[in-house]
Image (cartoon, rainbow, N blue to C red):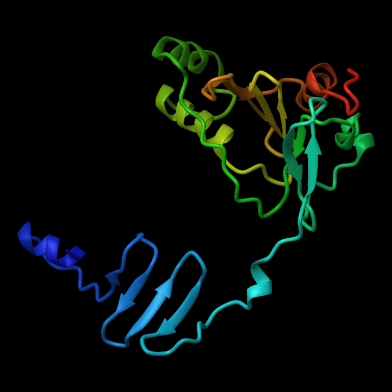
Length: 217
């Protein structure tokens, strides 16, 4: 059933939507113009015609990144290739990100999320909210938890970095907002707040928890 058909069955006013959903929730069809639109590829076509109108195929191909191999020989993700990363220099950071196999630098246009769960208990969430929610501008425990989950889940932007330990524990920092967060081995939020010492505190965390290439700490 289409949206207006459902609204009619529930005795609600129709919205006047002419689009018809065609499976997988990602294709729309306009019966008046016989136009098919695929949002996730931003392409349109007309029923009976084979040519798709949209961006050229090579426009959506991104350069291959530089794969990161851990000391155990396993792949641990990749660094972006051909994308705009942070312009912050190693001197400004106090370390060179390329020296660490478990440090990921974010980049502009990144769309890869890492969906993270809420605090593992209500008591722990309340405890951290009371202590930290003012530092991140949250007005309530619920808002604090939502902000924490989103910070640990969203794509790493150009001003963000993430450390991932072998246990699966993750640390994140945003240079532009001073936000800092931790996700535990089960990928649930452990804490989230604004670092008092900012970039210096993050540098200390990288130097302590970072794994240098070659297995040397």
